[in-house]
Image: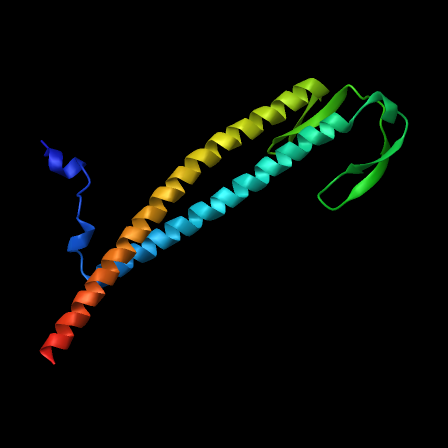
Length: 157
């Protein structure tokens, strides 16, 4: 029968750690903060792309039927084409799959994506703030311990 203490993570008061251990905690927190910040930036980019898709769907209208437009094949390759159906668009739903949707369905799809990402961004922002607070706390403890060591060394000499 396993004891309850083995299944629970052990909690350590950071103030009890020495400066070298605090340095390791600081490094770990900085790495986590960097990773979270990068993830936040990537989510922001995705949200911006989905918002651009909403705008693009809104640009399609009956006035453009038969007119030559540039059709994106990749991010940097466009070919001329003619709009023949202004009511339907092809939506990239991920992993190489495309779905034909009406403009209103496409707009709703992209709005749902934007809202989903907004929720993730808010949650991620809270996590980043907590990690930043933890890092600041550790930095303050390191500073206090370094000052205490300096004072102790000054008294000895």
